[in-house]
Image (cartoon, rainbow, N blue to C red; front, side):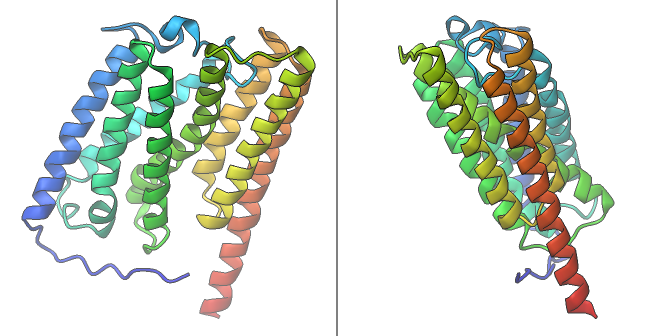
Length: 275
């Protein structure tokens, strides 16, 4: 894989300063959206849209505790915003390559929280799909760059990996919830089969991410987290579905296994190249 050399100048330019401000404004908007979505200002996401996005709305809905991952992601996005203001980071190649995309992702995140408040579920599907595409584009850029220092790997690669992995699972749940809210109904057997198909698609995305992005464990961890909580939800809450729970567990194992295998292959190729 070709990697872009880190040729960032020592001094930031005007575009760097503009990007820093843009990311900060987007972080403020994201914070506002979070206050709305958590019920501090508006209605909690689980209670908005007539409860269509609650933990017991569909077979693909993760159990409530799954959403605690947002606390980690939001903390990471705040850390990213601070990181890009640190001395020497304004002209950092990672800041330059990802800054505007991260800002766009935070604005889309806020937009999703706002449109679900008014029950625009199909609009929320479009927004979360756009968010997934933006985060995918971020990782396409990240894998082209040389490894950063420990702080950068945690704040940038780690945060954005969790972000993409969770959004991938959330997109599947969002689309399913919107279809059900729109009146799509199946018998229990067909609903189980449909859930298994959706989870197979999620597993396929995990494999694709592993192969494309070199087995980034943060992506796999977030996906496995969401899939595991789907299993918990179907075993402990309505709508109960053992078939869905088993499929979710298998999907989680596939995602983690694919990431570990891709990561091992990346390490082997690096060792061979430097031998």
